[in-house]
Length: 403
Ligand code: AMP
Ligand code: MG
Image 1 (cartoon, helix red, strand yellow):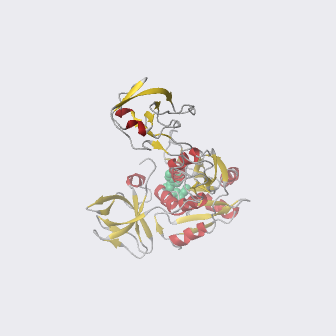
Image 2: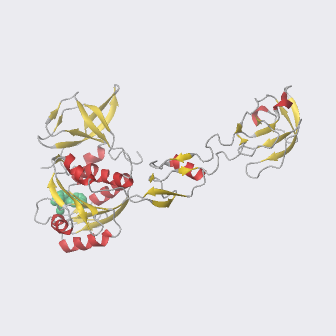
């Protein structure tokens, strides 16, 4: 049997970051930049008001309160031709360009709000409430460096410096199909002995959560021809193919049969629980990575976590490729079989200043409801069969999108 680390190493030896492409900035959301983004102009681009109020010359405000004539309005948008002469002021809105001659803004709250003339009750310091050109970003500054992960604030900054498109590593396209002649679509009538295809939904969602574009193909029956044809059709749009089912030693385990002759895919027993049978390799002229995951719902999801997710993250160019891990204390004893690395479904919380884990499911690979209650996987190493209550255990944190 291979170790989990060996299997992951085989995967990472094959997958490469995808070649960069130029995308519109919203399409690049969640991607990793491969260029530096430089500001072609300073930010702010001009001195402007930080408040709604009055642009004044502070030299006119030595005796407070004072009443000044208001010679005009300046709003955000058009540059104002107004110049503030001694003894006068201009009403100004937030973001409007400072008129020449003024050296501060008096917030409207410090005044009577007058339109033709205004009474000013408080004196601002020179320079007050003016946002200076370039105080956020200097002309020519690198605002985002290659390698930056584009979240909301980074996209906003790219737009603010005038970029509508950026060069990034694209999201890998992950094609997901379920094999099994017993499978039925949710929503369709179900007969005796049939089960719902849940894996293709869970795995497509997991791919999207990892940062990929997920294409759910759905159900392919245990028929070698149908499977081979489907794989061939899907290759054109795939950066990764993920199958579930058909990789153990049953008589109808067609994935093993078909993938073994299509490319470099090999099938191994990996010393893990759940998820022992694993297929991985490449197929097609472009050597597309293919993961043949086991069919049991929890096995397929845990296998995805261990092997597919790091591959997707590598293709994205995202760091780190692995989920965060923490040390937690076991609230109850945790058990595992000797020689296998166990990934136990647990709930991770904090109590008395320490991370704690409680099992939320039995070990059966079909116990999907237990998996749905877990927010973490406790990792029990190969040579450990029992972790006592109160003892530390390493935990993989499964943060989910939207939670
Ligand atoms: P297999 O690896 O094909 O032998 O499948 C192992 C177990 O997982 C069997 O009980 C299957 O019925 C179940 N299974 C296989 N594929 C799926 C799927 N797409 N959704 C839910 N359960 C599945
Ligand atoms: Mg099957």
